[in-house]
Length: 341
Ligand code: UTP
Image 1 (cartoon, helix red, strand yellow):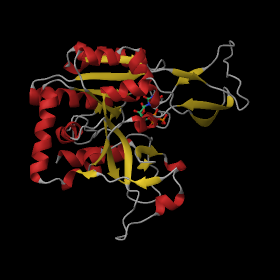
Image 2: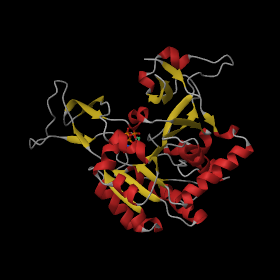
Image 3: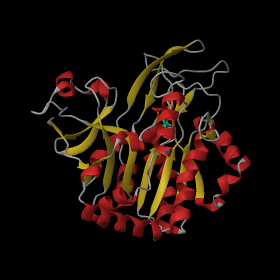
Image 4: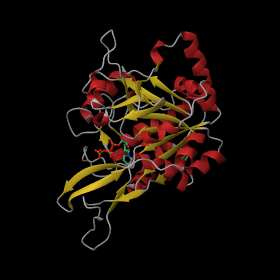
């Protein structure tokens, strides 16, 4: 297996002419209704520890009125309507654990004034929890315990839940997937959409530059010539540390969960078996057990043509993962409010 660094298109280094050219193509795609957003909201949000779906967490802003994460995400859809008079389709992936609560929340909030038919929820699949010996974890009533199958469950769920069909019926060509918890995510970025279409890409992955060799983020690399993401723990230390002549990191591009996928690619990945990753967990109820998960980026190698688009971290990345410390509401608010200036 040969690992090589990827050469990104750096958005801020585009010439004025290229920027304008891509922007125009992106605007046309949006106006023609060719782009849908898919928010990945099936996760458990264990680290944040908020009761209920992560999207219902109220971000306690200080300079603006506090808003839930789902309301912040909904602004992306509403802003597109304000700018171009078009409501992009918004798909929201939930899990059995949080689907009802999520849908009730949208109902209670009048779908954030987005036409109801422009928001569609779909439920991802599950895997059983297992013990080290492979036997299934059962609850006190003897029922097999299952959990959401990871964000890589999206591909099968898109097919099984009729979303790919829906895209086809509505002549939507591209799906932009984003994590529910990045409050600065910018999926309907016209320039990136333009790069996607103009380059005849089946996939564009947005990246940010890694700040130091030890940052725990997935690296976007070429593996045997195919663009993919290698998780921090699986990336050899010598590659994480490798430098260019000017001292910058050789494997600089990190994945933050904003991906542009063409319908043809989504269909192809839906028919594939993705690798299964195992997380070793422990709780009072079941003791030590294994949670199996698939990752969205394991589908990326199937793309016929991929471009990595590097954007500025401060423009597009403010995740809420932890209660406090790094990637917490506090750090995300600072980043979000700095951008309001
Ligand atoms: P994370 O890996 O950060 O997981 O998910 P999480 O569930 O939000 O938080 P922790 O790890 O339990 O603290 C990245 C994105 O993938 C989605 C999440 O909702 C988030 O948007 N996801 C994750 C799913 O949609 N389904 C899953 O099964 C797992």
